[in-house]
Amino acid sequence: MSIVRCTHCGEEALEPGFIMDSGQSSQGYVRWVEGALERGLFGGAKLFGRAKWEIEAYRCRSCHHLELFARNPS
Image (cartoon, rainbow, N blue to C red; front, side):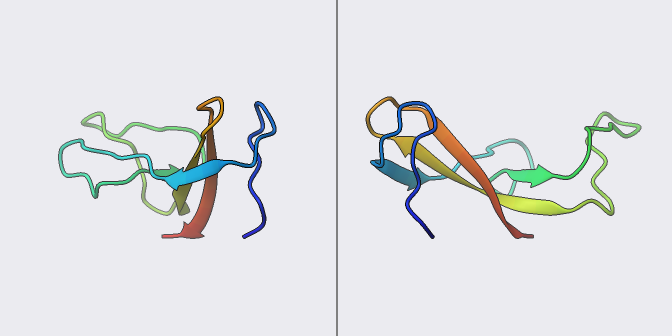
């Protein structure tokens, strides 16, 4: 991967991390899902047939801004 720069302050000192999902029945991480949010009968998001991508997260050590990238389809 190329150098990741903070889009807020331009710093190169970004540290990798992840966005945690600790909700009920979660897998421990969040994903980006293709398309607008549609809710099913019981209020949950409709996911069938949609592309899902893992999210890579980086935090700027200088200004603490978060940079998120959708990578690795799951």
